[in-house]
Image (tube, rainbow, N blue to C red; front, side, top):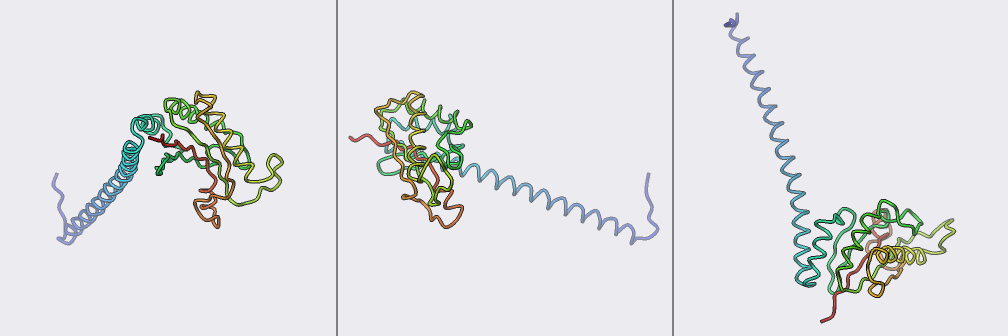
Length: 209
């Protein structure tokens, strides 16, 4: 059924409103496409970073790199830890809140599945493994279990050592040490810096040739 317009201006107004709606819709679709492209790029970049790290590991750690690759790509450790390559060791860094409550050296139940996977993977390696405990510089107040950050960091490192030992890592390849507040990786003048300094490092030492 044909629609007749009494005035030409009414017809032109309708066309203009339709065109505006189409432009708005087109802009919305463009923004959505850009958003998903940025999201995809972010995920891809993280994946590439991990692949590059594992490639570096392969170059310096040889056959052990297969175990580390599986640990991060298939066993999900990357969800709660990060991988750092140093000259003579491979460092797996856990921020303390992931493994321990504030002021505590008891592993949180939520961390058990990851510690079990970590232990099972490390049993396949011949490398020495050193666990380091670190804290921020805030003094322990009202903590009856530990008199200092030094003691707390050492107890946390030993708790991780015992968990790895229970899950199959030979005792003669394990060691633990607490550094307290004395080896920060960031300044302790902000909450972000203090959070980064509260950490557990599982160091896989490179075998000497």
